[in-house]
Length: 335
Image (cartoon, rainbow, N blue to C red):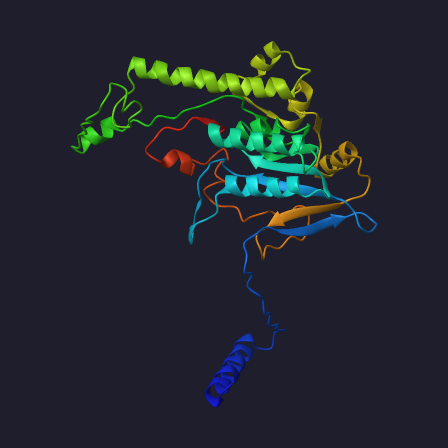
């Protein structure tokens, strides 16, 4: 190190000390990881050594196969991240069970179905990796698509105060024709077929277009009911259809009507994972990108984004998937 460089380092150090004042100060040097592969952190462990693992996998926010928009630009695709975590847990033979912690009002039909099938793969296993039990844990919200993916688990535990249910499909079609006319803007679609611009925001739906979309809605709704019927074998289909009118239920109500197995907390879900996997002692692990801090089992896997957390009762911000100028079929609870 030459004299000028050394002098610069010393000056920087002196400035830092001066700015810190008399308060206790610590200087931390953090290595930058050369890989973005998921790290594993132990957040809780029973007594013992060489313990098997139970993986705690979070699925938060709107379920959509797209990147989220954050303050500093685009963030990670939440669906892709969830799939990556599930695959990591499935391929680790030391992981004996998975607790799927769900805090989601749902999302697109396709994203919900992709995650549902990925969870089934964890349960079914493969030639190299045996299947392992999965317990779904519904937190604040596990509704619509959030409940859909929970149905892939062996059992569902819900916080007594969680919001779940909302079994159904919705497509929101925005019509700005009146607004465009007021500001003197007209649109004229040149199309190859009558229904090519069906669902356009610049005009109302025609009766025929409404029938087309209703047919798709009915198909996706039937798929949702089939998923629930496969998971809730003690519920007759007629009873499921009665419950599946789009309404939401509390965790306690859902237990009483048979949509979840038990109302309880995360500790109960972890204990059920141990019991189903016949693992009396284990360490609970979570996955995150390098540098993520996991102090307790209640640590989040990623910082909440304003875009994916907008499902409270008094919010009018549309989720990103609905802001685009196109129609989406959604398993979504959006009051």
